Length: 125
Image (tube, rainbow, N blue to C red; front, side, top):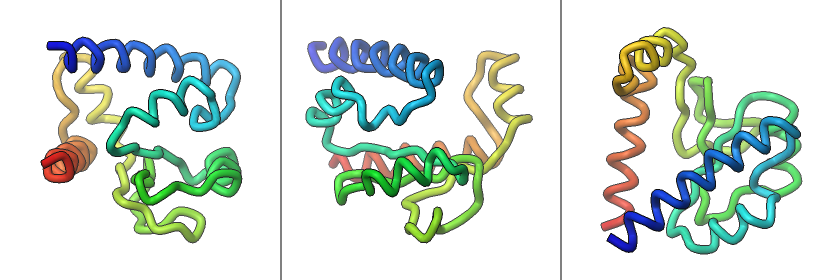
């Protein structure tokens, strides 16, 4: 139960941090609170896009061996010359459908999420 409470607290923190990062447009990885949360994690997903902002973030602080570089809205095995662990394809219709029905994301993006979840379970055991 303590782990579940910590997870819920961390998710609330992450949602607030993401909203704050979006409002000031700065890399969330460099935030001191993110570093504290990351120090408690066994595995970290670094989400990056094929855009100048993500490339600057990756150049400034390349992912470590503990971090899984995940490309968002792309179908590629690399991002600016860096090998990605997984790519999450762009699938606006699946996201819109999930939001409208308050259901899980389906389609190509849903399948990619399921694969990530399965790999995370394997990594955790």
